[in-house]
Image (cartoon, rainbow, N blue to C red):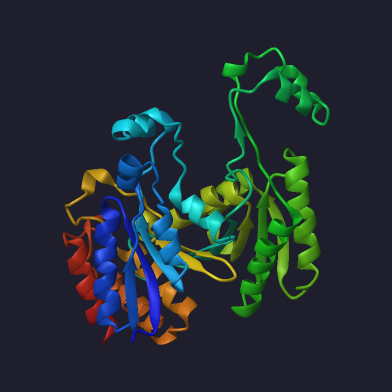
Length: 374
């Protein structure tokens, strides 16, 4: 009987290919696991009207964690047009399945390491080691939006937000509102996660990425909670930077930063920027972690134009699998994956096109296993 049950969620496009490569690595390093396939992605939206069927979430509840590939997402109008048959007549709204997973399983902590692998020709600098902690369930991605905006809603909002008056004459169909929701609970647990990580791994600083000078209520609450939690860790340097300034400073002086913590939207943007500093989407990976469950993933999309070509770089998926192994307590296998990736990148013999090579996705997987066993 396998030691672990892992939900296996390939998704769409190249997600299936990088997950196939991940199995080569995990099987080659003998992770004692049973992988349970789950239906997720664009195919199931088109033919069932649900990109994350209930059978998949039910299955996931019988597993310890999940490894996820990639999905296709399209704008609402296009999504509705691709529904099959009578589904087009139903009032269905597409909602990202990965966002749903984060919310339904309360995977509030998105942990994204951005570490320069020695010898990677795509590194901006060699001494970058930045972990971004992104709140995963609230913020600007909470999914609370309005449009059209009725007069009754406008009037209700004016009571507490006088600046809404400037939009009172805007026709309902010509205005849409997205909310940014920050709760004290949500802010505290992601900020505390960042400080706990810094404390555990002896990182010297934690930086809050916010915009409290403009987003005074929500940014003010994040800053207040950050300052409170920081007092519990006096040995760790802490400060906040405005998100726009952070975009500049990460490019100019990335070595200055060690742990960043952000609300959902800012974290999404900043973590992609940080990821590009150490190789881009071929290496960018993350863990969506809650108290009782976790989903690990490469952060790239489904890249339909490359589907079937086995062309894309699978390193991000291998590094996501490494995070999963660490989560499961399989530290030896995690270390071997890291070793295999590092040697493969440094040697540059069997790498994909983005690293100047000609290797196919699965060839890279076999090379990583070989190098991991050295």
